Length: 337
Image 1 (cartoon, helix red, strand yellow):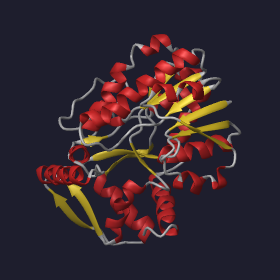
Image 2: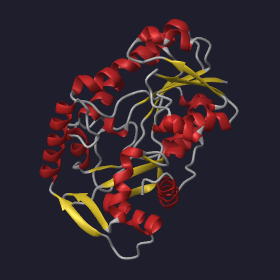
Image 3: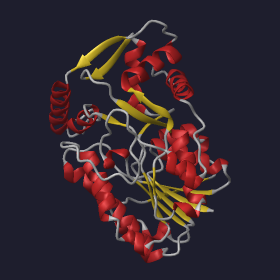
Image 4: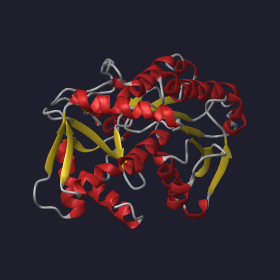
């Protein structure tokens, strides 16, 4: 199949291109002319078998020629950082609407169109529960990223009637080789510490990037995906402090419990607000922004993969332990730990 991936140079995109090549697919990687291709080249040496094409989901005219004749389009392009709601919406809402409009115009009979949302769109979970794809939205005040993904889902609803093969993936926390924003998650346990927000347990669903990619590929192959939304996860939900304990044991051979550094939720959000403020001054939005800290202070982010298992016959290949071990080895091999 001819498969085009937008945001192909990103963390998930680089791994997805690798998987698609391994499956024998014809891969078209859509990037901007200014995109950093470091990770894509690291995972796909020489970019052999990958055809680079240039486009930007914010500008529909850059999409149309690239979309012609493709059997499937997987749109990963979006933004996890921004100065304000408009920044997030421009990429995560308007960009996906442009993708749908371009498909309708130049490739209306596409076999599969996959848009990328986020578990943040659905909102936080409570302790002991795993949200399904059918749960009503739960609004988390201050989470601009989640709000943009939620609005995207709401805005593209009419397109399900126009593009019968449209479907959505909602990644939870995704970890794996090449995930630079999560590097500090490994650096802290290396020092014998773990960082938590508040005193209450926060349970998270984690996904290995390879499991996310295999799930997306099953969406491409399976007509059961049409019109659906899917979560893909690795292992069972894990408490955030325990995840860091696992990293300490598996990556750094630490047998003693990590020393806990607990930050009050309000202080964490305030720190994020300060980082966002300084980010505006230097015109570089931080990853640990007020939005990200608001998500970190939430009750939890646990979701269920049952629907993917039943409709797509998909199962994860990784465990939490094998995931953090492989990720840690990649960081070490590249001199980051």
